[in-house]
Length: 328
Image (cartoon, rainbow, N blue to C red):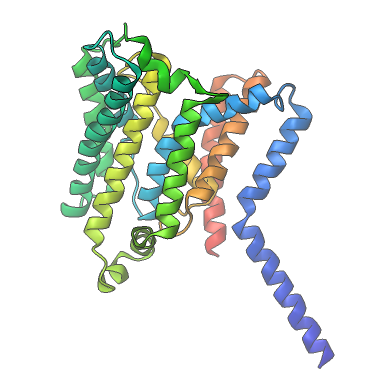
């Protein structure tokens, strides 16, 4: 009897350790990564550099948050980088019409551009996916080309510059010692966490991502959920684009290229399942921090941007492999 109880305890302990390892793999990796960088990378642990890491991940965080909603619903959005660029040129072209614009008007233009441009692009993606049953990959790939093309047509392939100084408030200024971009990132991440973990809408997203047919039989309006997640993703992508244009103090039609890959990498690396229904904002934050720390450390070590791109590809591959490991 005692031998049986001992074996049972060992099995429970082993099972618990495996479960812990699966659930917190990314957290452990981030902790080890940060400690290693603090020990072996000069200037990494300085307050200025750590704040720089937050600034560097802020725009990706906005886009990755929207991508988290879509991926949790078992979708994908390849158009976020192009939507960001389109929103950026629309916002800068609009604010340029008001050369004496104050901070309030600049912020209003930024918000309106994000909501209007992102909402329209997200709605078209949602209509294609939910109503026309176009595969998300194809629907958003089409929007990626449409939005990028519109950005070039709208600006005649030229950057929009000579903007009022107030437009740079969101992208370049600070409140106290905290950059406004970091504050915006924190607000968006916190709001997304509350929506996904504390509301019925959040639970419905997980249900649709886990099994859309079962969710439909349970009374969930699957098409409505898909509409909303793509609209949210579009608006947050556009918000990331206008914040980027504020940071650059110009609207660039070729801006935010490959940002969709950065967002997908952050979501996947954090532990959110690419097949939907599992993960969340906390996991995305882990992925954002890991990618930000890796890129920052490589830059401090003088590694070329080409190798950083290769590293990002390896990160995506590892994330998918880990996701498959968690399913077993």
